[in-house]
Amino acid sequence: MDMLLPSLSLSYPKVAGKWQNCRKFLGTNRVAKMCAFTPSNSKKKTVWIWTENKQVMTAAVERGWNTFIFPSNRQDLALEWSSIAVIYPLFVEEGRQIDHEHKSVAAFAEISSPQQLEQFQISEEQADKVVVNLLDWQVIPAENIVADFQGTQTTVLVVSKTQSEAQVFLEALEHGLGGVVMKVEDVGAILELKGYFDRRRDVDSLLNLTKAIISHIQVTGMGDRVCVDICSLMRPGEGLLVGSFARGLFLVHSECLESNYISSRPFRVNAGPVHAYVAVPGGKTSYLSELKSGKEVIVVDQRGMQRTAIVGRVKVETRPLILVEAKVESENESYSILLQNAETVGLVSPLHGEGHQRTTIPVTSLKVGDEVLLLLQGGARHTGIEIKEFIVEK
Image (cartoon, rainbow, N blue to C red; front, side):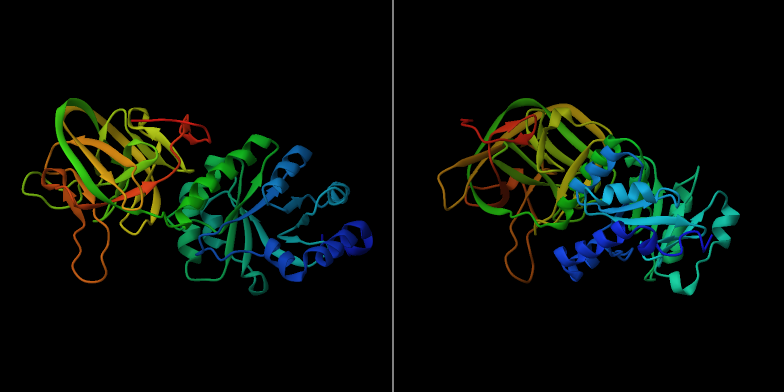
């Protein structure tokens, strides 16, 4: 097998030539970055594509994934695709993957049993890169691999056939593996994986929360309010972004704090009435009434750090409500939210330098002049997506 492709540069000069032109056009550093592995303990994940479908190739390249794996007998396909797109082709050999210069890029192993996984080893010269095909099983082996390679410089990519399968590998034991090889012939799988990364990219950026001053408080009547129970524990300062209008979402604190009234429930946010908007991944909003088990929401803290959480349960119950309005000093706009009138429901306060910080203000203790945190954004929404159009909400 080592002599099967003695020199891709000689056997397929156009492929090698196109790669050299790619280096000249993009520059050595950019090419290196495009094809480099990412350490498994980094947030950024590596994606390679294994396909013989031209539409899948096009969709992947358009989304920034340029590394493609080919069987050793499909050099003709690599040549054809290299003539229409800037790609980095790799070829499967026995126990490894090689590039166009016949250099070993990664070890390759197919594992179908716990015994094979336990015995799995890679040579020292390939110790920083490995592609694993776990065949018909995934979750526990993925966790074992994450545990085995933690603290090393080895990047492990696992072959996946669907977005949901890839998600298991990318999130195993919280940190996940270094990346995935999407072995698919369906364009939809590429689009779904890109959507997954787009939603997770929210976590890499801080939200710009704005200080607002409470301007009006009014006890109203009864309404159907929503408690959102997520599948994660929240810490002091964390909650959900909720508001009557999408243009201004209040940071509503979780029930993680100890209280004289009820036991701490660090998985819960008493979020507001059914009509209210709540922030969800991808820069979108959802009505609280639309949330259900399995959906995702954005959890945010006082600094604006955000993370994605899965909804485990939603409770809708009729409770007394209180109207809260706030204004930002630099503008005349008024923002409002309705919340259950209860001591365990609170809004998050801004940070003020070092020292003791007030994390939350219960709505029952709110006063005109108190400061709370808002997320300001465009007001017009269509199915939760921000759009540019004239709109008046009051």
